[in-house]
Image: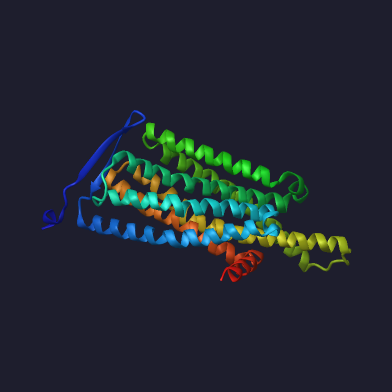
Length: 312
């Protein structure tokens, strides 16, 4: 009975950069086929909110000089541009790749390129959120250096360099089997360690501030009150960034960190099925980022309402 429900497995092979790659064009069981169709529908539907939410965020920041001039919002702009690329390029490529497993296509080279291209925006997103953490860390723990050292130009250079590295790794993964997965695992480890270190230090600073507020204080001068108010604003920005990074850790990095070590020693069909789930969760983060930004950033939310009101 089970054998009658099984479907014959079809594979198409091709050679890219001297290495043989193969894609599955038909899954072995009906259960896997149904799961694959659900994944295709889910990622296809996800394209719409990803493009709309991030498109609105990008246009709002570009049109508002007050938002565009601040480094913290400039990083949000870079992150939103990358998430918009996920909706325009990453998700459609991944949907096409998933479709090849149900017999919707058989071009091995295009399908292989489509799969590898999905990792580029996900990797850039990790680097951008790493920059966001670094920016908040410097703003809170080294406020004087923040004014002179953290500039939009340097932030842009860092993100562009990360994008170039991510693209190079994706190309090299064609020639070296599992190279991309091992790089992602190393990247996940670095991001986990740095984010944990940075936000632990920030948390200790916030706790120290709260404990000092509980003790009786002498009267502050106007200058000290202004500095304290600005410092509290920086902490508020850090809290919203932490929510964004926490959702990224839960949806993207944590599943990847759990999945990769277990998938290195299993067969290709099981590997691809598990990776489809982890990549889909990673793509969800591109929509959640914008939702969190609009929810936690009052100025961004107000400017977005003004933009939409002017349009409609």
